[in-house]
Amino acid sequence: MKVLVIGNGGREHALCHHLGQTTSVSQVFVAPGNSAMNETLPELQVVSVSAMDMNGLLELALNEKIDLTVVGPEATLSEGIVDLFQENNLLIVGPSKTASQLETSKAFAKKIMMDAGVPTAGYSEFFDADTALKYIETSPSEKMVVKCDGLAQGKGVVVCMTKYEARIAVISLMKEKILGENIDHIIIEEFLEGTEVSAFALCDGESFSFLGTACDHKRLRDGDLGPNTGGMGVFSPASCLETNDEKWINENVFAPMLSGMKKAGASFSGILFAGLMKTKLGWKVLEFNVRFGDPETQVLLPLLEENLAPWLKAAANGEIKKLQDELGRLSPAKKDKSGVHVVMAAHGYPGTEGVKVRLGDTIHFLNTFELGANDYLYFAGVEKNNGQLKTKGGRVLGITSLAKKLTLARQSAYEHISKVQFDGAQFRTDIGKGQV
Image (cartoon, one colour):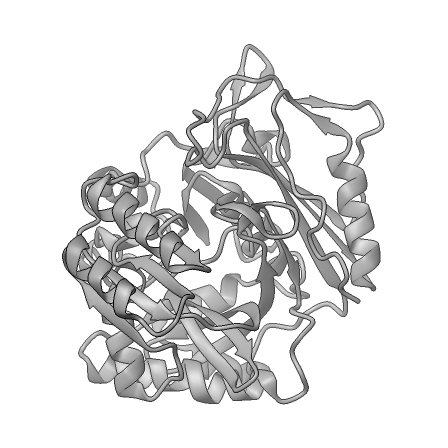
């Protein structure tokens, strides 16, 4: 197969690397990618077509006779890339524009969850700031979570420990428009306490395959302090899962959501990414995303024992059950290892503390920097300029390490991170800390 990966970050770099490692894939294209991806993947075809250029992506896929397309960014899915490709008889992994509302609209997702009986936090939705502020004042609880209804690049969720913080969140989002003019619809959820886990399933509208779990660290600084980011690091598998938890998640989250989406006339195909919390009262869903996670993908894919290409093709063809029957198993085989991924971000990231995200810092690798067989380097906010790698803002790069024990994987990842340097670099030192 010729495969096209859409996107330009670490997630897409991981997808390109993984899909290029099987004989069933002859060539991998990425659009728009980034110029640093060829540092580790010289055979990769990097094409400068924007992830939001629907017609340009279609033309690329048709001209290059692409056999399978995998979409990274949620914004591309929300614009209807899947509908467009399917109308042109092209195989593509992902949900339709309508089904993408599971991520683009928190209110839509809540309604589907409630109708399908999927456990989730109680909530109220608001279309103007003043009504939301009055609700906060009369709430019996000090703690609550304020969420944008639309896309917000991982920055639209504010966990508030006091009513004051909740008021600031509403004013910042709806009146000051710090994330853009489109924030005019929010929901306020009850505050849940517990351990957060990301769980992933590959779906074809009818059936699904469980891909694994991970624990993301969203806050910028150690100890889960500082502003929310797109994710500063992750470890996998989630250490809090007990023997029957995966079965419970499949039966009480993924299966009813697929049925609920079909019943709502929006059958779900592609990656269903459940943000879960294990509370004292059991598992609850915080939210859904409709694509591979970033940075979760950078650790989930290296942990697979087999290549995901046949599974992705089966999802796009509506043939997951057929593949499961042929292989005699429900999910791709996984390595008996743990993985840790650490993100390095640019100075000023995520740009919500009054400091502008800086571009153009030169990235240096110490002479002793050398990746082993269980180590992976993925580039994101990077560009190549006159032969030098420069930061291009946001999350710059990430390093994944695998080992039998999570503590050893963590040690290896941080040894490698210590050998990458650029001015203003930010990274957490506690990814996976305290985990066995």
